[in-house]
Length: 208
Ligand SMILES: [Fe+2]
Ligand SMILES: [Fe+2]
Image (cartoon, rainbow, N blue to C red; front, side, top):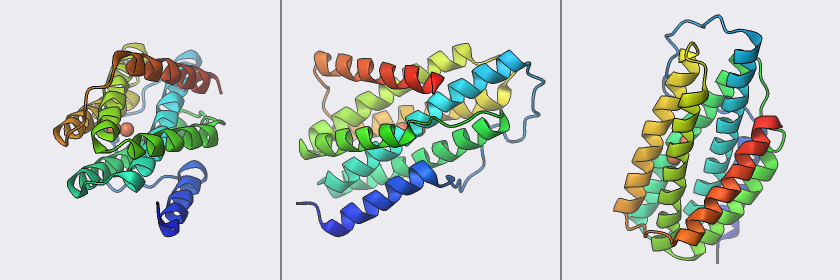
């Protein structure tokens, strides 16, 4: 049984993630770089890609929240918490970059959050081995996705690229850490299903 207090804290965190501005405690990657003179099409593309990444970070918040509620092992819990802190930075950076580009956040963020929270909690109930395995696979897929974005973002938009590059490095570390704490390799059909569902999310968030 999950204590009711933990559920209330998780619910409060969810509302904040979706509705309140995210706060960053560290320096934003690329903050020192000058703003490039992007044309309207480049700016629109960069804003849409950063909206997708922001929606991904909303999912990451939910996933880590859901898992932290259910993770059993204390060292796994600590690793999840450390990664979750970096995810909060990512959330703040992408949110700020969207605003700088004159874009908007995904209107479906509450839906992404709720879905990911449920998936995270369900993975957590399967035990640490699968919980951490699920997390590692998620992070690996995110790394590939971010690499794809580095191929699509305008070369001139060094500010967005600096954020995405740092996120990619952090997510790769999160994957390694989850495996180190005992995450298992997921069966291929599960990995494929995860990839298919993230495609729906990223495709929709690009538009809405
Ligand atoms: Fe992240
Ligand atoms: Fe991550």
